Length: 146
Image (tube, rainbow, N blue to C red; front, side, top):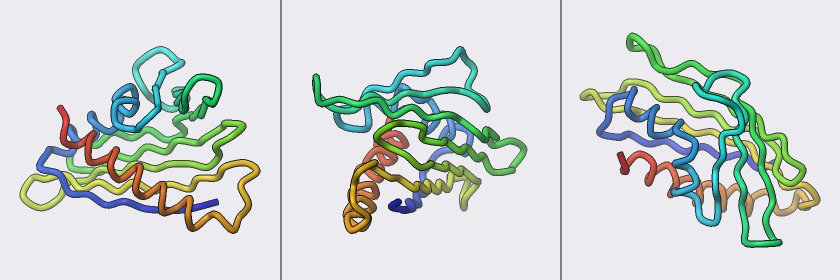
């Protein structure tokens, strides 16, 4: 498994940063070659199932994820969400934390442990670097766009 972490400070309230990061279909706009579908009825909470479809045509695969922890920011306390990846190709988890930062800004921490089945462990460092790059750009886009 490859593990990485991203940290961002955004000129947004924690509530707005949370909304932008956890409106799941928006991730499909921010991650190349990916479409996000929420497979369970709203609102998002523990038990919500999200499916990321990644690839082109027959070279596509599904990356199903379940929300296992859902605590939106409230009354100055941080928001925290944990997703468990349950796919045949991609495994692991992702955590999103949003807390108040200096000057009314939001501080975001995205942690992820990602594995790709049948990928030898010798490639974990490459996978971590790629994950940091892809998800770093995605988080930046999600936080920038209303």
